[in-house]
Amino acid sequence: MMSRLKQYSPMKLSNVTAQNVVLTSDIEDATLLINGLRVPYSYFNGQLFPPVSLEAVAPAGYVFTGWVESSSSTVKLFSMNSSWKYYDQGEVTNNSWKENGFDDSSWSRGTAPLGYNMTGVTTTIGYGSDDQRKNPTTYFRKTLTLNETPAANDFFQLSYQLDDGCVIWVNGKEAGRVNMTSGTVRYTTFSSTYAGSEPTTGTLNLSPTLFKKGTNVIAVEVHNTSYTSSDLFWACELFTSVGGRANSKLYSEPVIDLPEGATLELRACFEALSNEERTQEGLTPVCINEVSAANDIYVNEFFKHNDWVELYNTTGEPIDVAGMYLTDNLNKPKKYQIAGGEGISTIIPAHGYLVIWCDKLEAESQLHASFKLDADGGDVQIMAEDESWSNRLAYPLMRADETVGRYPDGATDVFVMNVPTIAKTNIMSSYVINVEQPEQTAIGDVIVKKETEGSGQVYNLAGQAVQGTLAPGIYIRNGRKFIVR
Image 1 (cartoon, rainbow, N blue to C red):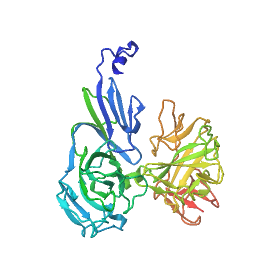
Image 2: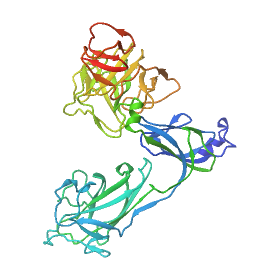
Image 3: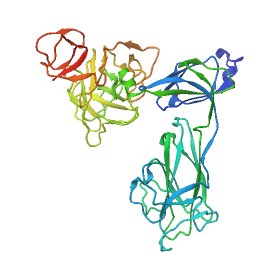
Image 4: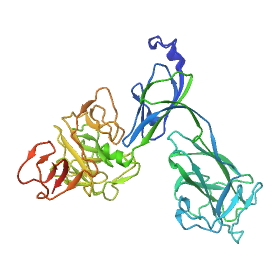
């Protein structure tokens, strides 16, 4: 393909040498751009023809720290003959045995390979008192330490020797299974395949999202093929790219020209903001991320092109928005209280999205607010159930094929966008128009007062002086916001 591009004269590449380039990010939710085009999953591995412009965009709650030019090598985290804790006394009824905080001090310890009645076993384990009804499952645990937080493009490759089947867990979450059927696996579940006289060998690629900086737990349940199976075997080794990078150069600007070099690996690095910095930036845990008040593109569960609002979780932990308030009228901040139901989720994953349809319809499988949006322009606000913070997005008149949203997701900059992206990363194009926003209400900035409390001139959020009895809404006195209910 590259040779054909060079031969295609309009491309003017005949005298240009292609560069082999790998682009990655050390956090999963960052955005990487090549000549203004978004890189899917923030990972690129291929050839580029200079000149090339690269850009790294930090997600909400992070700040860009630099591009690192590096080379990678493989690190072995543990070997086939490493030590494991194991339990061979029957079923483990405490389901937390797979997790980090489980107390395994009463378990036995042995050097791998572990098992019985197979050549190569170093540690012989028990199978119960009846050789015609052996324990169908044996449990193994190992801890390991990572000095860095794995990036989305890091790899973890596990090579195993096994008889007969297994399920592997990392920090309490299933990472893979071998010779086991799909669905729920119990103590009495047998393997789907018999390994024979020699252990089954192979590799599994484990997701880097399962691992974290610090202590990690690999938990394995090894299943026999029957109660009368004659043998059992377990050993494995784990390799990773974490800690294997040799950094050579740092570029501090988020937008750079592709450096020279036949082969390049560049990693965009980011740092999480502290809680104090998040507050100073005006970041709230959940924000109004995108608004569609004249939607003619997406349909809801009733196949109707109704208005919608997209919420975004700016944090690294899931958030349940049940009980929070959504409104299109700042004088009525509690117009709609978010409530789920059977089959209707109110949880936003970390750095994830949740859509609420604004159409006054009864919810069946999606959330529906008790109001519609004004396509001529307006405000949408979400407020915490305890009223400790709120987040507002003001939008102008929009067309049916436009939305108004933040870029990057969760940021303070708002644009009219010609590429609507419901429940997905907002996209910047050359046709976006900036929308100036009113002052946001940050965490801890709103206080609840009775209208008779305090002294000093009262102003509304537009900066206009207000006299007499205050209607329900948010006001400013002495530089502080307060709510009248």
